[in-house]
Image (tube, rainbow, N blue to C red; front, side, top):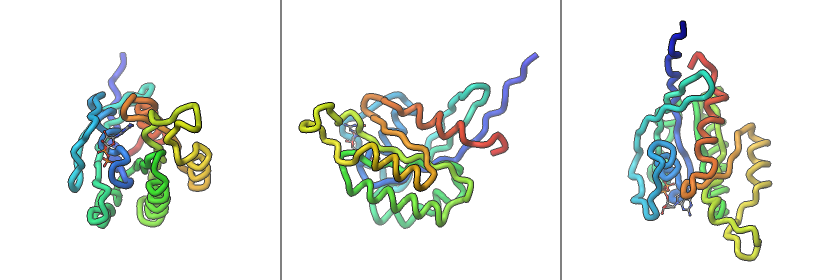
Length: 180
Ligand code: GDP
């Protein structure tokens, strides 16, 4: 006889500069949808989504915070008791990578010691094999190095094509202990 495992609830926050694609990543994960000209998130949005990883079910409680500076002051309210965070940057925008570094530092200083953080370089669809045509401005190595230095998971994604989006949430879920 088998019993269904109760879902493990995981509070997850998204942090990153405005327009890097935080809401789009959530929309892709939760509804498998994409909007070319998304209205910006004001304040914070809350969504839930279940994700099955092997024998376990994770119920993500997702807080998508707006990246504008005036809302950044509210961010501690969202990450304070989060078990997971996605720090998102746009691989075509170096300033958003610098901002991502700041968020990682802030999380390490202020968030729970056990928080699982994934560094996510979004808009991978804008990368071309031919370097001349590619809009890429942040190299894979830069992302990998930051992730290694800071002990983060690392993914490059596209909310537009859905490349690697589920992998982010599966990767995070695999790191979360059962007792959460
Ligand atoms: P947020 O402010 O970080 O939540 O960013 P949004 O999700 O609102 O996205 C900002 C803009 O970038 C919107 O016009 C999206 O359609 C676009 N966008 C988001 N993700 C991607 C992606 O992976 N590829 C491309 N090409 N555009 C994206």
